[in-house]
Image (cartoon, rainbow, N blue to C red; front, side, top):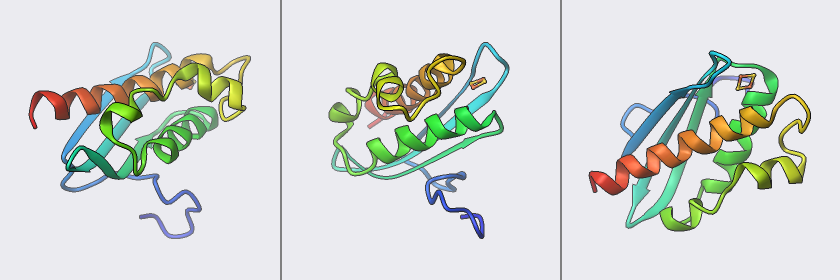
Length: 114
Ligand code: FES
């Protein structure tokens, strides 16, 4: 974890159960790392070099996913992030989609290689 970083889920993970990264249409990269035990997401890290809104969306997805069963975490949606105000609604809808899609891909990675 980075010193002085208030968002404890920001960063990379050395030995995740599964991980994924997607490059969005804007060129920003989003990465998700999951530690999964008995189908429960025990720990989550996300990393992005993108804008503040991208990072806010990554943080919101990580916060929502932590502690949930993998199938429950699939109900986290970009619409939910936008409606809740965690994502800047005017410029940033694609940031929410990028964050949620990367989580989905990491979960798919786990489901295909349990
Ligand atoms: Fe590219 Fe946010 S501006 S994902």
